Length: 150
Ligand SMILES: C[S@@+](CC[C@H](N)C(=O)[O-])C[C@H]1O[C@@H](n2cnc3c(N)ncnc32)[C@H](O)[C@@H]1O
Image 1 (cartoon, protein in one colour):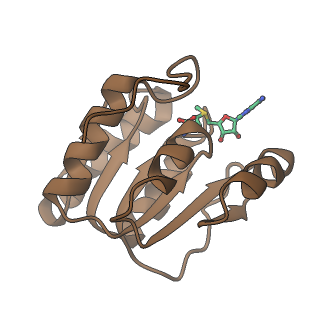
Image 2 (cartoon, rainbow, N blue to C red):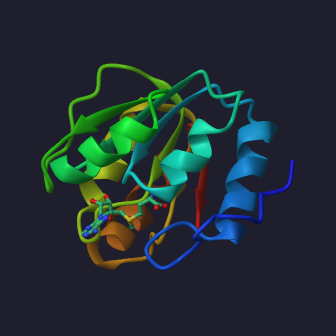
């Protein structure tokens, strides 16, 4: 199904319509059923409307942001974590979507590499230490899962 074009405020700190098209392709191509996200927002709303996603966990560093989103999206489990710490996650997910927070992607990508079984999708990835870390770990990541970044 094409991305809807009404009442959606794409871009400006959120995913764009083009991002969503690419994400949707991966959801279908890799039969993604379980998804972990770092950085709650529009992407979380879009994921929650996908019937094929049976489990969605969204992690964010802002408590007030989570509290607000939780009310609107009961299908999603929200988890608060600390910026610049590698979040402890005991579960595996088909896909991990990394989109925040700015300047801390190293930690989120480290966690993603541990728990993603099929796909890691990193949004706005080419930033400072995140880029260095990815260059170092690229081979390990790409060996056993798809790594997409825009
Ligand atoms: C780059 S945004 C993207 C969020 C989401 N993936 C999307 O597509 O909309 C990621 C971060 O912005 C932060 N954020 C959201 N609303 C905010 C606000 N009003 N002020 C400051 N930070 C905010 C949140 O902590 C979130 O993790």
